[in-house]
Image (cartoon, rainbow, N blue to C red; front, side, top):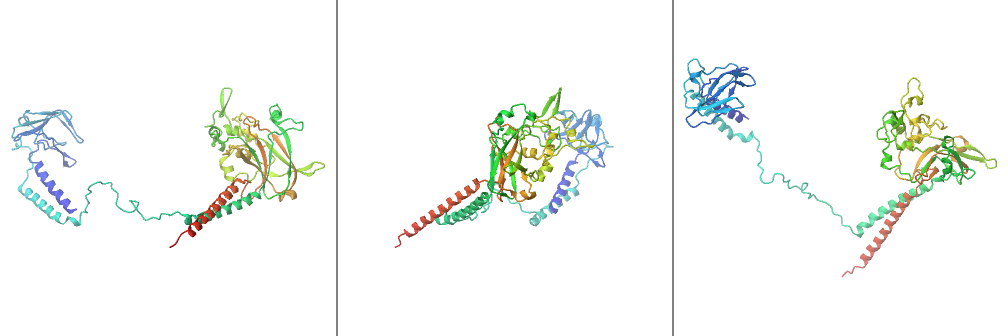
Length: 506
């Protein structure tokens, strides 16, 4: 670092003595320091040159107005200007005009710089002491260079390709590794362990699903007592567009524990892109005017104005609206029965109920219909959203917070699906342990048509175990794959024994 300072001082001193060898005819001081303006003009040897400025010359700190001249290109310009008299101006021979600077630079044979006239500031010339001092600084710099290795770090010079990676095991991917040698001996334990594990899981799932009971009733072609089918009745002008039909169900065994009730549909593609995206989740949180992504079921045109539909979109418009009652027959002779108690609690998680679906805020004791006042019902709905759930005795919620509505707004992934409807409320002596075996009557309020897409409707009574709803597909897959792996293990053992005992030893 010291050597750099010494070198800088030597260079500055030598420059200072050379730059001011000619006197300054234009002189100025800016903020306590002089400012040097140097215009270069390559003139022939033994030829002096001057610069003459015509008009105004602009700089950051001052403006020169008039005609001024300067010799040797080392003029000092500032707010205090010493103009050049006419008798000392350079003769305009070999001049070059600089348009940007509005200046003319000329070469001439004048001895203008040799002897300054009286009354003008003298130029700073290089004294012998200054020259000796420059050589002294240069000598000190050379002495410092001999002791530089401790101060300046060595920078290696790169030769060849600069981006070549280092020849290390990590960068060249030559780290030691283990390459498995697969043969019969190594495959036997892997297949054996995998087969036993899959077989054990399959057996556990099989007994778990086998302990789950289900009773499925397909009521698509539900008919009245006179034999009229549902398809014919649903198209007539019945009150509220609905009618009731019933099915008799016989449970051969007790459904002990928690019993759940589902409704199901087939050939219904809720995962269709246009259907799946036709909804607005912001509207379902109470922002009724937000109907983006719901076209063409976003607005209803009424008296020349657009009224937002609540809820908007295809999913809400096609909401499943069949309702059910299950009657337990206590006396077969008189056909007397008691209604099976069920509840909508725990059908959905609290997160879905509280965060994803909220009715609009009500003020000053408004009713729910007042909160939905400036909205229209979906085209396929019989009643507005504010009346949804008012006729349900299970307290399933109202409006956007209705359990049946929230369940339907969760699209299914497959065309054949089930959705949870209710959960058995285990109360009273008859249902505290679950559903007892016996005869039941399922009363259906038939509202939802399925003939347009060729689907079917089901009602399912399910007693679930620790593995969930009854589904034998998963345990069968585990059992088949586990058995196949054990058979392959036995085959490999036979191959190994055959190879071992068939070797001929000398």
